[in-house]
Length: 304
Picture 1: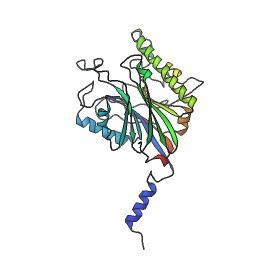
Picture 2: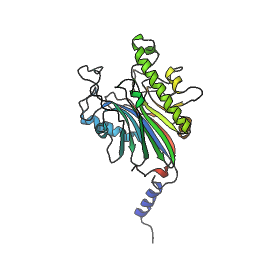
Picture 3: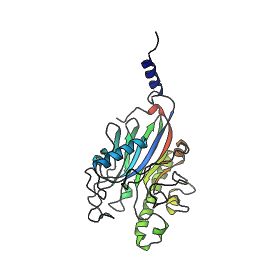
Picture 4: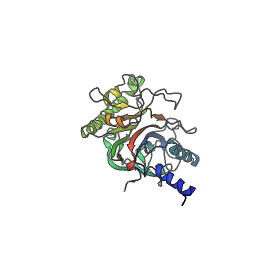
């Protein structure tokens, strides 16, 4: 009996389905500072309309990432405005809400809302939550904790740390500004804390990526932040190194980065780094991402 056209189509779809395939699949992992994303549209330094939330949600889909490390999201309710529960798990830092913060730079009548790091993880990716790196926030109550997860796909694991470091010491001009000495010193201490976390992962033999808003132009030659994180004895790979940013014409260097250890770098797909253009008129950072080559056998096993 001849096979119908519909049957052939179903067989073809089954053959290319990630859940049934045994071949390798590249999973895109992204970092995205969502610029004071709140849940009611009015808090913090950047008011949002429903059209804004919808535009970000569309940009999330266009990013085509399996995991998105986000920063500057007030709470889970805010994350859910752009990451629908049917598609995404949400993990957000457990740092207590600090309440209103400093006045906004360009809206002094408003104040910063609580800013959290976290992850949106596609539901077909298995993962586990690790304790937050709370030490980053011990230096100042308003400083963000880093959210820590391990994703597992096809028997391979990748540990991911979503970070948002102290702002105000982006490069050498600030290093020379005596008014910013304390800011730069706090950032330096946070870099040392990250170095300790990375050293612990290296001793475990764990592939890892630190990603997010480092508030430092790490790719500039000789930068002290990169020297702390990646000394000659324990070098890391900076995915933004040698890349041209087109996010904002006022800035020619990245402050959002993906930093890979050697094991993670071995899984990274060559030339897969991507910067997604900014959506609409709002000053969100531009998402940066890298693909990792992981076996597809783990796809379809959502976290319990």
